[in-house]
Length: 134
Length: 134
DNA sequence: ATCTTGTTGGAAACGGTTTTCGTTGTAAAG
DNA sequence: CTTTACAACGAAAACCGTTTCCAACAAGAT
Image (tube, rainbow over all chains, first blue to last red):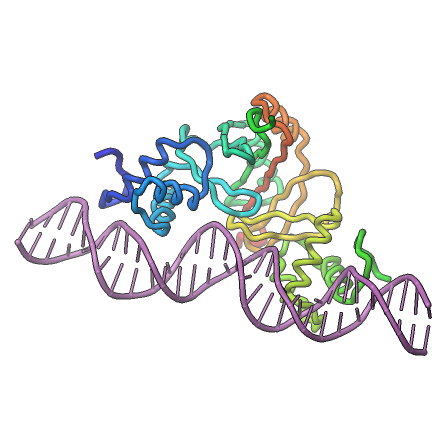
């Protein structure tokens, strides 16, 4: 077996296809983009299943997900499992994972100072990468 | 005239209604919530117009907008015009505007270090405020 | 081989937002 | 004050990404 999803009773061909694709691509991509790639390589996986599998993987911590300013969700095979943020190229989706311990502390402290609990934060940096700038 | 929107050739009753409402409420609210409030007070403003007016105001820098993790857009009459971030209560929408000069610098430096240009970042902190925690 | 039940996927539903297009009414010109 | 031009309105429809439905399917256990 190629690779299994934690807490997934059954390993199906479709999930293997999604996992295989995720291992090949780089950067954040939308569920629909991933689905199109699967269609292009004749992988026979439904869009619904792509969404479900990605959600499973997110829950399992196997992939990261972010959202574009417009709200659509982006997915990426996740290197480091610790909490971290992203520097994403608006053009090509190329991603740099960055950690900012100071920022984490700052965010939590700000929340605490105002009496907020159950705190969570989002921090993403978008820009144009050097390659796309030309 | 109560208040005009910059670059808006015509001042209509509907826009005045939206502006009036925004002056009364506090915290981030969705376009739909604002529309419901207008309906409740018999202001006779269409949902479409609420969206259009809010967009005009965002473009004019008169209101801030953020997005919930789910992607829906939130609007708020903007106090300070400098760049800043928000601490938002998931329950009631209560908002605290916070500035984080150190974070700004950190984000820009991170981007520059990786050759990214045309940089922009989003940072929002979500939590449950003290009042809603009970 | 059979059975159980998690999984699949096309179609339909969903929810927020945007567009369309005929109507309305503002504001300026006459 | 009347006319005129066109910005703005708004109900309905289109959009778009995502989720739900449900009947058919198939992975893994017995």
